[in-house]
Image (cartoon, rainbow, N blue to C red; front, side, top):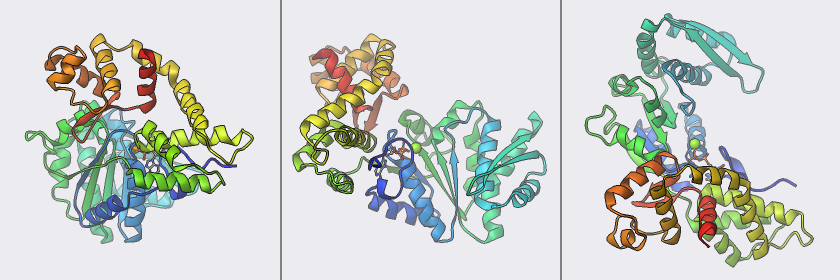
Length: 379
Ligand SMILES: Nc1ncnc2c1ncn2[C@@H]1O[C@H](COP(=O)(O)OP(=O)(O)O)[C@@H](O)[C@H]1O
Ligand SMILES: [Mg+2]
């Protein structure tokens, strides 16, 4: 029997729930040419959401281009990934792709690899002299608007994990802004999860991308909506779960989309192998939770051992007072955390490591099972 819950990458179809308001708003914004900055902590569902939006936009006749910057390491890989995404969205056959690259990038020699997959996938590589890189980049930034004009269609370009451009020794933002501010037929959607880096890119008045896009924070999924999803997914495989157990489960995962799917996934596994498989109990939930924690306990120990004392203190304090204002005098003195400046340094370091999230003005430990693991240390 197939597990009705999945966690990891993009979810689609029956595995995807809710987000109706966001779907409506963002589809309408992007199709009107509005640039967007869509941000949330990791694993809240940005990529899954944008994929659905791009499907909608495609049905409206807009050309969607999805660029995942997660793995960029250099200007060379940026060009490779961006070009491949544009080519993939606009050419369906190899000869089309080659022609497209020849026309648009006369300065480079493209090397196209076609993969035997359906739909067709292109891999693209090129050789360009170092001095040509700026020229290639300039052509590339201009390309979406050119395509839009030529095809008389609108385009939407999504840069997922956009903050990764800060890892390059290349000020992409300035030249990108210079070009895209004139692109009236293209809407750009910048997405990201590293808040401290996004703030630097988009909130600083002196930075090129300041005010280029409308900020849209993506929240967790509302408990009412998650409850319906959980109940109906279990029901689809004839498993029943009581209301109070769903509440308990969501309390454990704090309605975090990823961890909720992970815990439900494990609950299914636990129940599937027991006698009365169709009735879920509190004990099953506890076993499933333990599985989620123990699957990561080696990684958690390694992370913990690598933390500075102040960082550990702050995490411990947060497990005891999850909703606290961490800079308040009360919190600082109760947990003996020292001066606000010291805490700020610890916060920055923990954010950088991806262990702490900031949403709606307060901080929380990103991984709910890591939080449980820490709690057990002090129990
Ligand atoms: N709308 C949703 N419905 C159900 N599960 C979701 C939804 N959005 C996210 N998830 C869960 O979270 C996981 C991570 O989603 P993803 O789109 O990769 O997040 P992000 O891009 O923000 O890191 C998914 O694999 C899925 O388990
Ligand atoms: Mg993502």
